[in-house]
Amino acid sequence: MFTIKFKIIIAYTVVFGVMLTIFAAIIYDSTKEAAFIKLDTNLKSYSISLRTEIEDELGDSTSLNMKKLSSIRAKGLVGEKFQLFDSNGELIVKDSTLSKIPTESLSKVSSGPFVYEKKRIDHHKYHILWSTFETEKDSTYILETAASVKDVYEDLDRLFYLFLFIIPSGLILTGIAAYFISKAAFKPITQMTDTARNISGENLDERVEIPKAKDEVRALAETLNKMIERIDNAFKSQKRFVANASHEIRTPLTVIQTELEILEKKIKDNESKESIQNALSEIEDLTRLTSSLLAIAKLDSSQNKLNLNQIRIDELLADCAQTMNQAALKKNIQINLSLDDAVEMNADKEKLKSVFLNLIDNAIKYSAPGSRVTIVLEKKSGSKIKISVEDNGIGISSSEISYIFNRFYRSNEIRAEINGSGLGLAIAKEVVELHRGEISVESVIGEKTVFSVTLPTNL
Ligand SMILES: Nc1ncnc2c1ncn2[C@@H]1O[C@H](COP(=O)(O)OP(=O)(O)OP(=O)(O)O)[C@@H](O)[C@H]1O
Ligand SMILES: [Mg+2]
View 1 (cartoon, helix red, strand yellow):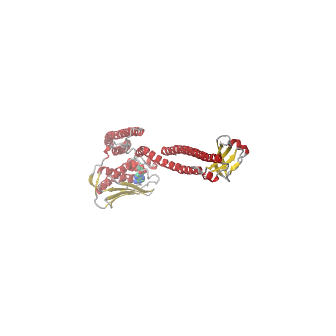
View 2 (cartoon, rainbow, N blue to C red):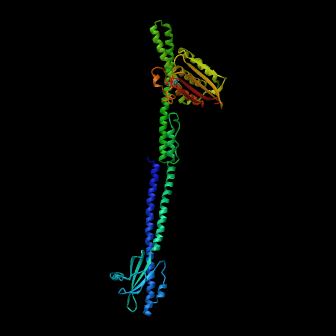
View 3 (cartoon, helix red, strand yellow):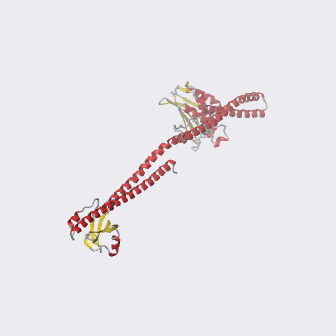
């Protein structure tokens, strides 16, 4: 696929190439014409000088002074030579390289005072000038003068080779210039594309840079920014709606839960009791879902700032294990804690708590009854700590492992059997990253899963 930049470079180069070639052809042609006009003018001057001398000499005597005639030089001519004929074409002065006048050409060469002709003699091109004149004694003579065009063609060849060098060099320079010009012209568009490409649901507050020049590119940037603003507003109102809805749902849910718990205690009929227990379990799931939605909405909004305090992470982990113990006992799962030292760190206690509660909840949820969950806290180099939560549960397949931190992602196999919203790990990842930490997972399907959280202690 050709980019606009590439097309502009090609267009510039082709147009300049055509112009340069036409220009070179015109210069070559006019130089050639001027050179031949000059050659013919010089040939004529040579002919006139010779003729004047011949007229002078033939006026005084009947013989010619050949030495004097040969010494007459011609300006700007190469290999000039001459022959003299009488009116019948009989040679009076002969040159070794020039030939006799063929009888059929006699009338042509003597048709005017000056008749030009081009001829090839011994593989060399010559310009010939026939000059017919009369002496005072009324005798007619034909003077043939000739000059080689070798020098003219040598000069033209030099010009031709110069163009052969200049045109490709000019084209290369035009290509380079066109590249830089189009690069500069497209720079704002390239910047806009990069910014627009990086804008996602997470950073809709970013805007593309507005170029200073009031041109089409500026109009495009402004339109793009307005569009991003509209999307941003739509996203914000959607998030506000989710946050408000979750918040509003929580209060009636708590009321329903309390009422049902009271009712469950009062009812003696086992069948009705079971129905109420089922309803309570559903309400519990719904309460957890609304809490997760509220948490994710808060993380999305500007309220995602951390409420940092000096906390004891070992105590927090013990607290989480304690909270989850009830659920673990229901499945006869043992939670083991390995917390070496007391570790203090700067963190948002409530948010970190939600991370570990979800990891332990997952470890219990996705493990068979009677198995074990191990929580390990280790100090690492560079003021870092690592917390791992390991289980011997169902594991996660390698094809799914890259999706589990996505919002609402749940494994297809467990979707129908185990309750959950698929938000727990997405929230955990965001909270850990807000603490400048990392969360990772290793798993062997059907054997074990280990989630590791690395956090800096000096945030
Ligand atoms: N310890 C684990 N063992 C096996 N699979 C796991 C484990 N932890 C998470 N997963 C997989 O990752 C998915 C996403 O987990 P996540 O905690 O985000 O959601 P959830 O547990 O399904 O729902 P909830 O929002 O209630 O936490 C799970 O549905 C499950 O498929
Ligand atoms: Mg979970």
